[in-house]
Image (cartoon, rainbow, N blue to C red; front, top):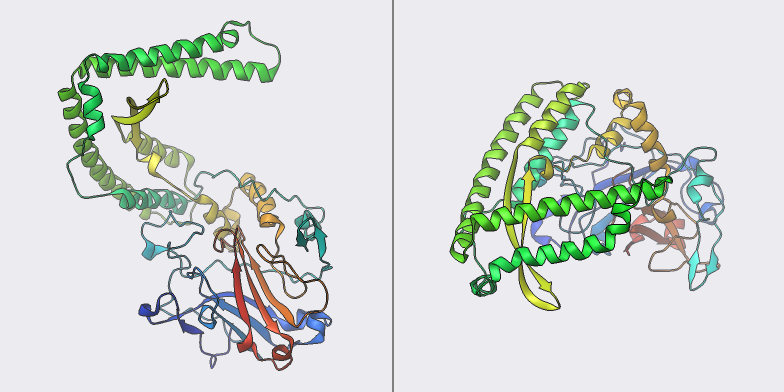
Length: 463
């Protein structure tokens, strides 16, 4: 919310100078009147607003081209970003993926707007082993007293779509996966080692015998679970059921391989099959892509932010699951300690298996929109709110005080280098800095005293 006369910060990336000058991405705007008097030793602004902009698509953002700090005296109307603002993640470096977008051009140009509270907390560094720690253990539970907080290592299960836009996410993710794997038709290259092995007298027949021998060893080891009476305790019953399921899977795989080798008993017939199935797979993928495009057109006929009836979603899901292609593939394995043996396994690929729905992000997008929050099913909301309260690796966003370093340690005691911003990896914001790291913006106390934010520096630390 900058005044109209303030220009949106731009820079020429030191990593991509050929791209020319580009807008930086808006990260945070803080009301300085909310900052405590003792922050930064009393230095810095207590009126106006501090704004942080960064270039999220640099691998080593160490220069002034990677970020900008602005201090504005007054608010303006909420600013639309420049038309030439790039994606928040261009896919070059690690980060949260945007597989629910059909192409990189559809990746969002802005992060979701999420209001935050400034919370004053003690900031005391302590030595633990070889590292300096700042945030208390389980810091999120201190920030959200009396409210459920999930573990930062457990993400909520991917919910099924509850609006038509969610169904669109699923279909677009299939298109993205297809585009990433699509390649021009090409003759399948049959490796020499495969031909050499299959040419050996009796070798093709040994493939089934090797599977049967391996299954016999497994069955002998698993016989106690397979033959015991129905156990009383739940854990043992579960293990027994899993063992029976594994036995059935092995039997089905063995019978399928026997049928495949009966139909293709020679090197020539196997090679012919591999070439033919590769062509048929390409044809199926192209046709599947067209069918998914038709499903997408049908979804777009609805108001995307209206609830999708469960029967409509289940019917669409069933069509995607049934749109499948089965084929055999070879691999190279070890057999009895000898390398370079052949194995065949039947695979199935379906339109559904290509989907990467990312309905999680849709839940967050709806949550920050008061007009759409009611669309989120209560059961889904109860899973996500505790997750959004968690702090990734116990690292908060922070202004002032000691920083929670990944590769560096806070220096205990007085310092001239003051922390302006610590911006951490954050699931709620869909922020993933480098390898799940954090940005640290520092400024010298004399520059802060003069309100010269051009002297600030930025560091990205990752795992």
